[in-house]
Length: 284
Length: 341
Image (spheres, rainbow over the protein chains, first blue to last red):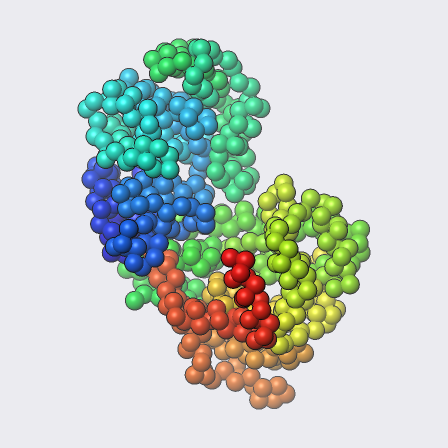
């Protein structure tokens, strides 16, 4: 394709081709400290929805190895979002090496905290706040569980901040690099934040899952233990490839919930949540 | 512009791949043509760059999971249909996997396709509905069209496993100019020993050729042609004149032209070791002028996985409708579809 960018995020390599220069320039800038893959695992294409839509009211169709027929096109101004969505989509639909959990993940001393929940539960924000406290950020979209080792691999792509989360992240990490503010996207206002140097530099180091958390924003602080059986069911829902992975997926998930203590935490604000996580960390 | 010739060559002769192969392009193309698992098996054991080897090992594992899931789906259908006592013949990918054929190695398997006697169709439909399959197409025109004119029931999907089943009673739409002998295909089917069966080796090839050249617009055609190559190679191992039996079987179903085309193209593109015959049946492998057009269509894919050659594609799309129904009926059908958006 006319414009190309390749990047490796954790163990996953992407090749992004685009009909326009702008999305590629944005990716090259924000991913500038990431390595290039030897062989991309997935190909992403940002194509004009119709030939003339390359110039007239440019409109991006998200395509690649894997495509969702119902995916809505995005305007060129949201090209970075289109690229990020397309990369996630490839991994979600095509990833088979790792069990994929929709979760954010931070690490300390080789041990990882996995946080999963519905959109809006605050898993991205929480991971960002913990990273500001010295935790290594491993990702806010997917946690990659290796069925052979049980270890979680990092996938520290750009952090996709939404609406109120943008200001919270700016306050917590005033030193961080941010992408352009994308207004009025299908998901509201979005701004991408580049993970810190520790996160990118150590992204090839996996960690042992040590805590599974189910955060819930907007209630008084409360923590309760979650039995392995409930964790298992919750995580089958949070996985994009549990069924496709077959027996390996079942084995990986069963091992994860058996070996990793799990808690649901309700929290009223970020500071309280960080305190709750760190308290659980000390007593794990 | 790049086309999928590199992929066809890699499948036919893996040793021919050079060290400086565009692996990214090859992998992307193979994935787009649903041939990545097949390619992975063909290249297994060859010296490859490490990242390529890892990616292809994943593809083999994924295909193995897919094979297991497809066989399980066949078993689910068997359990649902066993009380009816009617023959149930597996078709396409699931059949290749169930019969342990080389065409199944790494092959991606989508829907479950079965062939049953037309007289049993109502009972089969009722049994599947009772066992948890549900209609996909809610549109009454489509539903009525399927039931009146198609060679299969409207697709059913299982509500728990989310897997589709296509129930065929013959191998071409009833509107096509050609009428295969479905009863003969059923009569020649080979039992697998578990209550299910598969078509005869010749029948499998004739069905694949019918599906590829007498029905659709050649979408996914490279994979179907590769199936035919594998089936032929396996048949030729047991019987050097296997191609003759295939041609004779094709004649019983008025599919000699489509089958001969399949044999010529697989010979040209994959080097299938078939030879020409003049007696007792005629098979001429000499390339014909139109073969080039078919090759152009089958290879219309670039190194970014994009479909290429839009005019060729469109021509084959028009052809598929032309083959499928008489002109007046086609006009009526397109008019109805267009009015309904």
